[in-house]
Length: 314
Length: 314
Image (cartoon, rainbow over the protein chains, first blue to last red):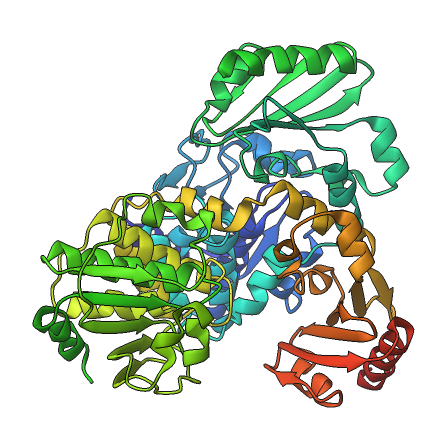
C-alpha cells in the first residue's frame, strides 16, 4: 500500500474506531489522537479506544477529547503488532476480521488486520501517521503536531536511542514549525518523576551490588522490599536500565521476585556483550542489548546462577 | 562576516591554536576538535588548547589526537563568550588582541577577538562549525561528524531543551549520514554516571524536602554532608535540576554551603514561575527558568528566607 492509498481510506470511510495498544505509551496514543483529531477535522466521526486507562502524563492529548456516539464502521489499529496487545477488555477486536486497517512500525507485526501498513524503518508509528497526512496534504493542527512529536520523542528516548533515524530528526524539525511547546513536553516525558518513583529509584540504587571489578551490576527486587516501599507495583517497572547506567558496567541485571522461588530477570548490556545470548542459557531471549529470562530457585541460587553465567563472559 | 568568509580564513592561514573554554563541555570540545581535524586534513598545523584537563567522557574526541609542535600564528576561540572563560592557565590569551577569530553562539559574547562570528540562534557552536565547513564544501570525516554531533546533542540535552531548533534536528540528520555511533555517544553523555555520582544523587534525593503541597522542593548540601559522602566536589555540580524533576513541583531550590553562614542558591522553575524574578529579591538573577543568588546567614535563616519568598509566589 502507498501512503496516498491509506490517506484515501480516511476520506472514503466514516465512523472510525482507533485502537491503541494496552499499557499505552506516547507513540500509540500520540498516533491515535493525532489521527482521531484529523478525522474529526474533516467532519468524520472518530474515537480512540484503549483497554487500559489513558495515563495522566499524556493528559494534554485528551484533555479536550470527548468520546463520540456513533455506530462504528471502520476500525484502525495504530502501533499494534499483535492482536494480544489490544488487551482483554477490548477482546472483541482480537477476533479475525475485526480490524480493517493496521498502521504499525514493528517488524514483528502479525498482519492480523484486513489491510496492514508496516514501515519497520520508522522510529515510531507517529512518523508514519505524519507521512500519511503529509502525502494527502492534510491540514495539521498544533495539537495534532504535538501528539505526533510526543510519539516520536518517546519512542526514541528523545532522539537518543539507536532506532532514531535521520528521518525522525527531519520530521521533528517539521513538527517544530507548529506550536508544540516541545521543551515542556520533553520535560514531562523525560525529566518528571512521581515522588513514589523517585523513592523507588533511590532504594533500588542504594541496594545495587557490583561484581567483576564493576563490570557487572545487579539489583534485586524482592516482594518484601517492594511491599516495604509502599509504592504502586507500576513504579517498579522500567528499572532495568538503572544497573547499566553506572560507568564501567557492561552487563546490568535486574532480578525481580514474581512468586516464592520464582524470579524474572532483565538483562541490559553495552555493545561489548550480547544480552540475548546470555539469557538463552536460562531459556530466555530478546534483543542484543536488552533481553530477559525467568529462573526458579531461592534468591541465592538465582543470583549464583546468574553470576556464574556472567563469569563466563569475561 | 559570511560563513564562506570564515571558511576562507582557514585556507589563508596556518599554525592554528584553537581555544576551548574552561570546565570544557561537549560543545566547546566537539567544535574545537572537529575544526582542528579539518585544518589538519588540509595540511595545516593545528592544536586544541584548554586551561583544564579534557574530561574522560569525551575521550573518543582526542584518543587519536597528538599535540603538534609549531610556532602559533592564528588563534581561534570556539564557544567562548568572554575572555574570562579562557581560564587562568591560558591567561596569555585573555589579553586584548590575542585571539584572531571567535566563533560562538552566545548572545552575551563580549566581542573580545579581532573578528567575531556569533549566531545566537544556533543551539550549539558545533552547528556553526558544521555550517562553515558545509559552506566551503569541506570534506567531513566520521570523527569530525561525531565531534560535531556530540556538541549539538550535549548543548541541547539530546534535543530536549527549549534551545533545540529545527536546524539542530536537520544538522543532526545530516551528521547521521556519517559513522558516528550516536546511540553509544548518547549513552555515554546522558545515561552513564560514575558510581560516586550515583551515590551523591541518592543521598541528595533522600534528603529532599517538600513544601506548599509539593509545589516547592528543596535540597540542602551542607559541607558536612558533602564531606561525609566522600565524593569529589565536582560530583556535587549540576544537581540543581533534581528538585524540579518531581511531579507537581513548580520551583526547585538547591542550597549549597559555600562557607560558614554563606550559601549559594540555585533555583529552577517550570513555566508557571519566574526563577530570575524570584532570585532578584536576594540580589541574584539569571534566566526565567534557571537562576541563582547567594544568601548569608545560618542554614535555618536561609531556608526561612527562601520559603518566605516562595510563599509569596503562590
